[in-house]
Image (spheres, rainbow, N blue to C red):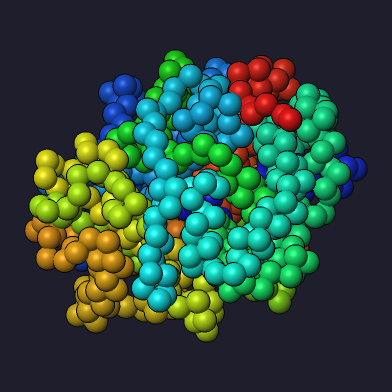
Length: 595
């Protein structure tokens, strides 16, 4: 899933419990290469920064991305001594924030839901309920779209205004097809939202935690494989013929999972359709920006006496002793030992590198080596999972003179621009879809008075191959960045007239695939794995053949996006906690009432 991600707990449960026998056995984006400037603002300030890093702890978490911080905050909540080691000077991974010339910038994500309500299926909301720390949420209800024919709309999410959109842009039969599809998806939607992913763990204790929700578990298992089948199968079954409806659903699939309908799981769309098109639904935004999420999780880590979040701590090596991950070595030579586990929130490619010295020394088993080799195999023909493409971003502060002061149907906070429904690779075609955000419209604190802050990007459609051999100091690289800025500005100007002319000097920042690779430590700048429904399955969180090493994040189950990565972090924490501790956490979460 991409930045519009919703995770299906039901799909998670089915994939993890489908084979019951096996189950029971078992840096900163603003540091763009063109400027090499350091972030001028870091929100989280450790209350323990003056204290030395512990030489020994129970759990080490490598990386302070959303999954790593989610895992660490739950462990600290249970008084498990935990140290988070972040390579950069700002925490949060893809949710980190920075400030320049009074403008507040964030690398993403850009869209959230399920946080402002008390009873929510969103696993990150549930984590906040457990740890007792949470950002303040701002609500809004419009999301804009610019179609290839130049027409645009910014209807409220929910069923009330979308019917009018279907009539205007889809024409005859569009509303009827969409309503019939929603009815067909009803049982799948119920199952997709039935069972919380917070109940999952990867050991026999899951029998206890899952059976806490017996009705929900039965409802999930009833839908079985259907939750994991491609959504395109449902579209074919319903004989969706209306071009607007087909294109709209394909775009939603892509924004959710980075794939068109043919590769997107039913569970993902079932969850999203039920969530976005229910009466009274709103979108949420963390006051102060996405960094407020990382800040809340980090503060929860340090609430425990033995919890630490340390920046500028680059892990160079995972240490292995007697077939177990026993700690890490930092780039300055510091060794930190872990008595219980090492959790890597780095992607599998980097994790494999961190194990390379142990592997070369013969300290890792053949089983572990084979597992890591397969985990980093991107060749589809040999059973690997290819990577998604990368991103191009632009961040800028602009003069807001003459612009509306608040968001509206004519001037939305966020919008998508689609250039060609019939492009060669469809919605996956390079630079075909641009997502734009102006969060200062709903949170004025993000920009100086009389100004706005902008962010636009292509969601996982930029080929890394276009950039990989370029010298970041070369004229060719700078020229390509300017070309990228031009088409991003064009998308912004669909709603903000003369936006590039309004840019405040010193605020325009362009991120490329090399930026993602360099500062977010994304191998090949990739957003994540390209997991096709019915074809690929993401691994769990335990490393086969190496005790004490776990992975969390978007390359592990249940996948890409905010709720999914939060769920991954929670499942990893559950694996390291007793069933009793896990059960006590479930006591604290508030889930939607069942019909």
